[in-house]
Length: 509
Image (cartoon, rainbow, N blue to C red; front, side, top):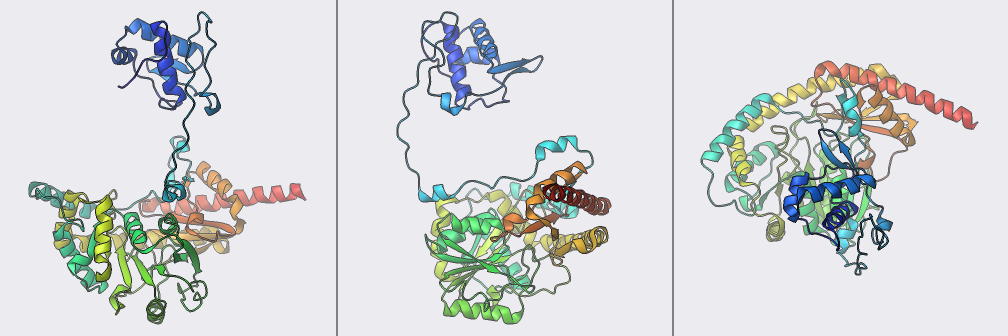
């Protein structure tokens, strides 16, 4: 523990000043337990009695509170506006004296990139309330499903990889055995013909988006995205100062002819043609050909995201857009191909045109060189042994059964009050409540939580926010026995909110 005595005067006032500074500057935040008195005494080289006096002073002045049998906890911190002022007047006996802090030096500027990135979006899930809810059904993004048999096989190959792990780290592009295994998989399952040097392993789908954006976009680059789309796509390009243009979808996905005016200056277009998330739309052969023709004529790069490609419901397997690309304009990435087997593992792969190979290699080397070698070598064995495909087939059957149960339950409980999209997407559905204004989402979430149901808004997936409530319901990890009760709880919460809306409107009238 690193502490430095502050100020001058009696030892206990200096210890007090030291701890108070830690609280004021947020190093000991509200609710945080202070170190034990012996620990502080050892760190500062003073007796424990001195520290006990300092702790008593902190508690007397409201900074801390003692919980019997637990310790001393910070109650509150001094507001920022008070941080530069002397805590107490000099010469006041019995009060600690804290020297005035030096004036802050001028702020040091950061990059434009840092200024545009505001961290992860705040969650809209009131998780602090979950401890008070019994039997809650979680339909939020945090719910992940996995295959039990696949997980067992994964543990076996992981143990084997630990016994034979090479001493050298993998190449910048990723472990060669994994890239070789994916070459075969991509050819058989996606029709992608590529060179091993054009395959890159990354740690997550979001790292893939970020890497692609860094290679393709600068400030002012016009980038087209589907609306809706994963919010991480917009953030990756937006952080670089690109101008993101939203392309509206119809029932069959993106129509490049209809969006030509929106994309007149575009140099990049991000699409998910095989199975769009979250609507489940699949582009027809004609629309795919038109998309490629547009990219060649524009000219522009197409970024193809392959999402939930192994878990589609009622949609025949189609080759990837990259497999149709004759002039190497498509950058292809698979979104999180490993997390369905092991939820905490979100590896992804990117397949790039050979003309971009060196640029991807150079930019990836700046931030990620080893790529967690153990899991890459283990995953190579898992894919090569066919375990990945077997696990995907089992998961597809599980998710199809759950999907049908939830959709039927929602339609029975809400009837025409709900409109469901994403019927081809496994693991989630997009649920529209057209008669409920978007402003009432918070109330719906709170009412659902009271009834034992955790909901997530899909608002963040849209560039142009819907005027009504749209929910993204993740059911993959929900037990089958809880799917019907989940739909019933949603319907009850919806009706309670409708009643509240009606009363509010009558009062205003």
